Amino acid sequence: MIEMKNVSKAFNRLNAVENVDLSIERGSIYGLIGSNGAGKTTLIKLLAGIYLQDRGSVTIDGEPVYENLSLKERMFYIPDQPYFLPQYNTKQMAQFYKSIYPTWNEERFQTLVAWFELDIKKKIHTFSKGWQRQAAFILALSTKPDILILDEPMDGLDPVVRKKVKNILIQDVADRKMTILISSHNLRELEDICDHIGIIHKGKILIEKELDELKSDVHKVQVAYKNEVPKQLLNKLSVLHTEKRGSVLLCIIRGREEEITELICKSNPVIFDLLPLTLEEIFIYEMGDIGYAIENIIVE
Ligand SMILES: Nc1ncnc2c1ncn2[C@@H]1O[C@H](COP(=O)(O)OP(=O)(O)OP(=O)(O)O)[C@@H](O)[C@H]1O
Image 1 (spheres, rainbow, N blue to C red):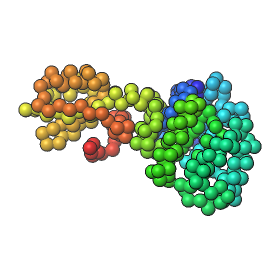
Image 2 (cartoon, rainbow, N blue to C red; image 1 turned 60 degrees about the vertical axis):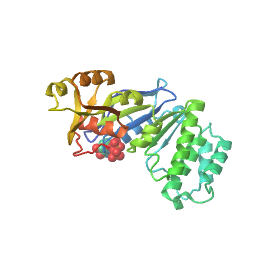
Image 3 (tube, protein in one colour; image 1 turned 180 degrees about the horizontal axis):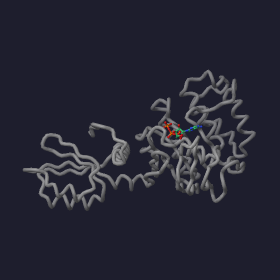
Image 4 (cartoon, helix red, strand yellow; image 1 turned 180 degrees about the vertical axis):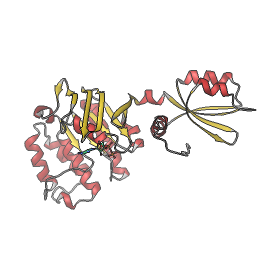
């Protein structure tokens, strides 16, 4: 289990990460989302043992992560711009990782190279952005890590390769309980594979929940009445956003589906629909609720 307890990290008095508590169970796929500059990369680097926290503790299975070689042998971090040794090709990078990861699996490497049809003798810096990322995935997954940390992992990958990558990730989680932490702005992508979501804003974790629970917490409601919308009704509900569309009122409401349905049905609407929200919509409205407003959003 990955755990952060009361972790803070500042750069020149700017709190990039502040009093963060976070836990990620083994075999879980955890999606970290947040606005630009929210602190995602800093948090990831703390978890990967690259940065040392100013306060609090960062542990994996109870052991501190920073400069912990035996823990680092069990994890692989692919940054938003994958790093390769200068002038190296994928075959040479494979030799390099083989020398530092005792878990390196040559058979896996060969299988993945064949599957992605990657030219392992071509210098990596001459690859396109997407091919470089594929090389990074092949190398990472050949180390058979217990923990895989990914910053914007699908950036530059075409839809077919994305699908391939997602399939392998899910397979590794299912087969050997690999744990994945993904930071991304692509919420649709996260929605496909994550089971837990953490929302970070200005260095603080605002929400940390199972994706299913998060989705069952916020709803899109469309209502219409013969006359005016009953004001008392809206006061009784936790409304994050309203928008008038002709005679129909669209509301984003936080709360349990049954309670919302019961309250609205009692007010005798002529139209009433309760629809699920996408992760993207939940993020936008939750952020709007804390003042990070995105004006005039149209929810289709
Ligand atoms: N090495 C550093 N030196 C100084 N300030 C830094 C450093 N790294 C991050 N910061 C600051 O810490 C804050 C959080 O940055 P971070 O890169 O963690 O955000 P992020 O959520 O990953 O952003 P984005 O989505 O834009 O990539 C920002 O205000 C950033 O300017």
